[in-house]
Image (cartoon, rainbow, N blue to C red; front, side, top):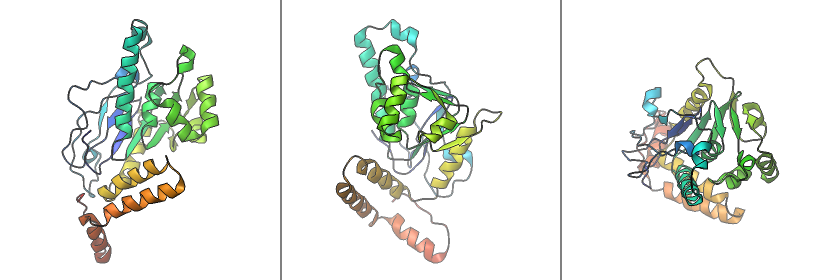
Length: 271
């Protein structure tokens, strides 16, 4: 999948879903890829922006999102499917969510409404999750005599721990934002506002904290963390060393040092 370095991604919830913005002009979707909205997944629409460290306005973040509520599969539609169609449908949803997880840019899920089943699986594929206190989240598939099939059985335990993940999946329990924060499912919980986009606003504020950093460094930092979490500490430290080495010959590293010496904001170009 083609994706440029740096950039920021936001998942806007009700659950409205945003694709990650790219560092240079680069489409994040594959030709012909359709949005799997009813599966609780989203295609990655083309999102273009020129990455820099000086973006200050919301419009400059170039967030693209799908205005839809992702509660999971359309059960009436699913009931009409042949078993082979169901397998294909879930496989496509899984592939789309994996693409989101593998984007080489930071992604934030902002959950202002309901994220059940596939909707939560997509949020789990993001690096950071923010939710309104009134939001509802859960992997409820066992109520339908199935299991989470788009990464939920793997990403939820890695996020909140094995025992709690089993409890939530076995019980099909739905939690609100406060409980989600308490168990580590989300990083931030906010009171909902009249516009119904409090989590999205918090996610934007968080994204702005990322914007000034070197885009190449952001990419390799994410790579080091993601790969390191899947191996033992010794191997993880070797991965970190290899990722660090990628930043040494970059122009951005020299720019960072010059900016520090000259006491000015750095002007990173992702080079």
